Figure 1: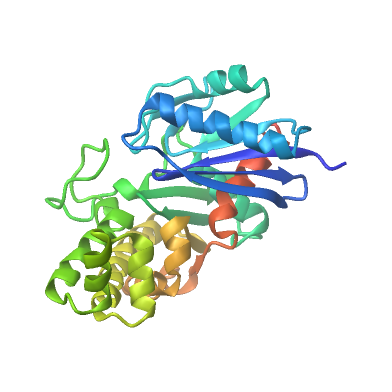
Figure 2 (figure 1 turned 120 degrees about the vertical axis):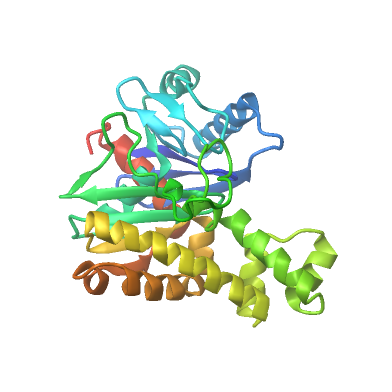
Length: 319
């Protein structure tokens, strides 16, 4: 029997979980959205429900690999700062070990995603890679010289909070900044732009969806753009250009072989987002990185975090 572990991948909007074996095959994929308004008790309860569900199909799991959208103190297992979930200053690892009676290995969600892509995905064979996940916000991870960068306190690599407009929009969530990349490149940012276009052209698809549903989501805008809605396509051009400016900064700082774009929105939008992002990044970054670095979608799409979490658990945190 192959060794199996539970992988939890918590994002700003939803929780993904599954059972992953030692060959990194995902056998059980489930997704649930957080209840609103989000409370710590509700978030933690959903995680325990996810573990119970995973154990119902794989009672022999030996550990849990958990990714959370937070800075993580690796020594204590504390979720230090968390922009999109109410988990700041919470002893996450100790709590989950006590509740599950399983060993728990945890890290920032995008650190785990890039571990998965580095081991067997879009960054396989590269010692220098950057990953951005785009969903409710932006997460980031970096492999440099073959090693994951965590920083002195586990808080390194938050590209969503690099400033691209000094006096720009307030950053969402608990971030105190203004003009952060995340304020312009995210599911909520895309929906905001799409609403502007829907108001200008109510007879086009975006306007019809807004009139019918009363709101617009990232998947709505992707659907409209692929159907040729000019406002939706322009929204992606604008957002892709902002993403490209952010990627240019990362190319200049890290000189990676590859930049991977994933996350729920990143995986769903694909070339709608990547085409303008590549164009702007290559026009603004310094050589040789501007011409040499590949800018590609995540190989594992929304499974990347689960694959990385499983790796962390299977290797007992020694990655």
